[in-house]
Length: 264
Image (cartoon, rainbow, N blue to C red; front, side):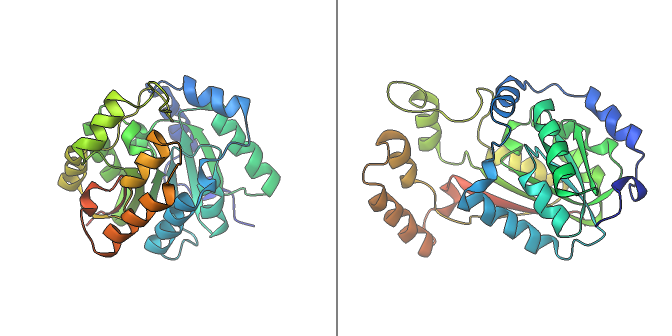
């Protein structure tokens, strides 16, 4: 069993808990989701599992390292990182989500996890850490220009961050999202405050840190089947996206991206 995280923290726990005072993001959507269904997990699908696997491969040996899991939800990634030997600071703005993480870690006997109600802009209160992980969290952060300095401050020299994100590079996809999603028969997922990560926001990260953008798949035409056609003909659209991915055509417009980040 891992040693308690309090024995290894680079910042005292009172500083971490004080970060909870900085929590401006509206949490009603996520509070309701976690409270209604404590077993909710966004990390159960293949894409999210693949993203977590890519992050762990990028970080390398996690034994004895400290990782911040931003937007931890009920802790799927937190648990996986802790089981790799990491000491994990799991942060989220949703109190019900954090309570679910605490209960889950108690049940699993993971005492190297510190779950905290805290938003990402307070990262620089945590002391320096080795790694930062986030899954579909950056596009929730506003004002985004406050985040890159906080991320840079929390990472040790040579530290790494990994984010799996959506992508606002396609004007066509954003037009559909803005004008059609959530109307007529077209479903809307996620909370009402989010907007896909823009190229300008990625540019802000690049000004602060070393950033490599990788497109793990082509996610474009498949969205039409999922949203507009309710899955009708999906296999055809998947085949088109797979063809584009294999031939590296239009990848910068894919709705999915990995951000590999390092502090020099």
